[in-house]
Image 1 (cartoon, one colour):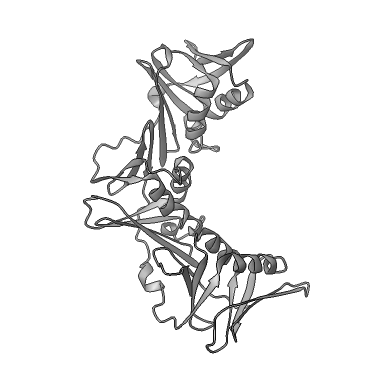
Image 2 (cartoon, helix red, strand yellow; image 1 turned 60 degrees about the horizontal axis):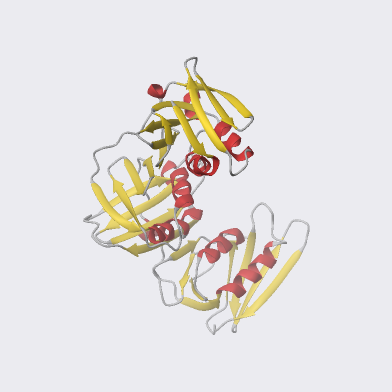
Length: 368
C-alpha cells in the first residue's frame, strides 16, 4: 500500500476514529487504525469491539492495499507536522509502515488488516432519517444525566424511544432524570426502545452540528445502532437490558409551580455552590412570600445565603438538592424562564421551559 495525502486531509478523519480506539486494549490490534486504499478512496476504521467509527476520504492518490497501524502514533505524527506538509505512507514486507514528509521520516510497526475485528451488521430492522440538530438535541439535553460505571449497567447509557414519528431520549443515574423529545417524518416504527451506551453517545455527539438541518441516516436492530452522514459512519452495540419505567418516576401531583428567571437562578446557585460541602454539594431552596432563598454551608462552618424575587404566595417550603445536578440541568435548558414544580421536602422536583414540557428535568431531594 502506498498513500500520498495532505496532512490536513488525513488529520481530521484520524481525529474522528481515534475517539473509540482503546487506550488500554486487551488486543494489541485494537490500538491500531484500519487503513484501506481502494480506487482512490481511503477508508479509516477505529474500533473497541463495542463501538466502531468508519470514515472515508475521496480522491487519494497511491497504490491500493490495506493495513493497520498505531492510531495514536500516526495521529501524533500528523499533528507535529506543518499544515502544508505532504505525507507519504508506504507499507513494507516486514510489517512496517514508513511515514515521510519532507525531511522527516518515521517507521511504525503494523499488524495484518485481516485480523482487524469489524462490526459487520447487514440486517437492520428500522431505517429512517433525522436532522443533525434534532439528534444533537436528543443527546445534549439529556446525556449529562447518564450514570458512570453503575452496577445497574442499563443506566450507563441513554434510552432512545421511538413511537411513530416521536423520538424521545431519557437518561438517569438514579438521582436525577432528563427527558426530551423531537418529531421526525416517516420513521415507520410503531414502538421500540434502545439503550445506547455512554461512550457511543459521547462519540456521536462529536460530529453532529447543533444548527444543521442536514439529514443523518439512523438504523436500528435488536443489538446495534448505526448513524451515517456522508463519509462518516458509526456503529455501536446496544446495552442489553430493560430501562426503568421513567413515567412512574415523574411525580404527577406537584401542586406548587414557580416561574423563575433561569439565568438569575444559575447565578445564585453558582455563588452558593462555592461554600457547599465539596463531597455532597448540597444547597437548600426555600420559597415563601414571593422570595426564593438559597443557602449552603460546609464542615468548616462557612455559610452562604442568596435570594431572588419570585411570584409565589403559597405555603412556605424548604427542600435540599445537589447543586451540581441543578446547575447542569438549568444550563441545558434554552429558555428565559423555567417552571419549577414542588410538592414537599421529600418529593422530587421537576422543571422545564415555561410553556413547554417537551424537555423535562427531575431531581431527587437530599437531606442537609
